[in-house]
Image (cartoon, rainbow, N blue to C red; front, side, top):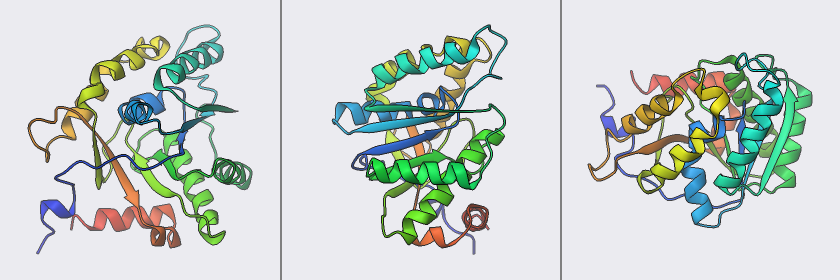
Length: 242
């Protein structure tokens, strides 16, 4: 017999995890489009939050001086989101590659910040940089496991639904979230991201009470999940549907 719905998606929202948070964002804007509502709620609850922008974003449009423009935009977004720290790794856009150097860099930052919760893009994201960011973070967290340091582990959705087991109600911060998303003018001129994100957040209320208008979806991984590669773990999640 196939698993019932509640084995595949939550029917209730969850409280925010304790901080500090460390969010790995492949590009400037992914932190806002993917989990900006939760970051705003963290700000309201005085939770310490940090974001790593992993690539330079140079291929995200035709505008001149795009790298500098996107850095200005994420600086402005960081202020609105109340981030405690913003880190630029300036890896080549569409060239983010999992490897020991970046894995070690991610591990060092997780440990330096004593991150209590670490966030990375969901494994079913389409953009290759998003999936590379997930692989880099996962491998760093595997080293945390062997080093006896255990932050909570979450994937978040940017442009694609991935398996989720953790939903955050962002209804009360929705208007502010849209203001932060509007900061990314260079990207909003390339696509209608505000409507796309709004649709994704609305879709995540399918299993929730009608009073919840918008939600962000996450998957919280267990410590024992780190014994598997991210590819193996993703197959284990998909297998629940069958």
